[in-house]
Image 1 (spheres, rainbow, N blue to C red):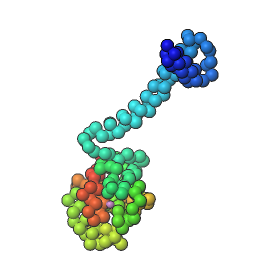
Image 2 (cartoon, protein in one colour):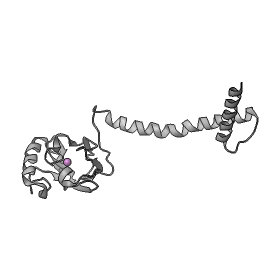
Image 3 (tube, protein in one colour):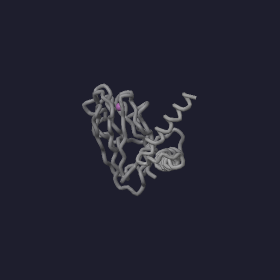
Length: 199
Ligand code: CO
């Protein structure tokens, strides 16, 4: 009996405190504000939750396992990290774009010489050769052979905490393909690569 009474008292106290300025002592009136707040809470949290889950689900739907970059105003921003990863593996450029800009963030902490990342774009068939030539060119050249005709566009090589970007003409990706984007730091492209296409 004592325990039940105590619990009831605590429950009432919690209900009252939750009600804020609604301090009416009667049970009938105190029941109403919690009902309001209970109704308001799901109403406030549901729309953001729904939109947050709906957007990635919708964009990821076409290809299972693909992480499509968010494109806004003919530009995208992608992340790279100390675990040798990009946060996306697909970039779709709207065909209406004349130029396209890719901004690369390195959200890790490791220096460029140990965990450098860039973004290099080539035809898929040219990727391995560009990687080999880039490795020979070395870090001083951002692991990209200077004036490599097979390189459609590339950023500089960056380390943790840095950001870089590159802009290029979309017309360069409209004939041929398929095209890839990847990091040319030795060994990274096995994990750090994705498809880039114009649609
Ligand atoms: Co890298």
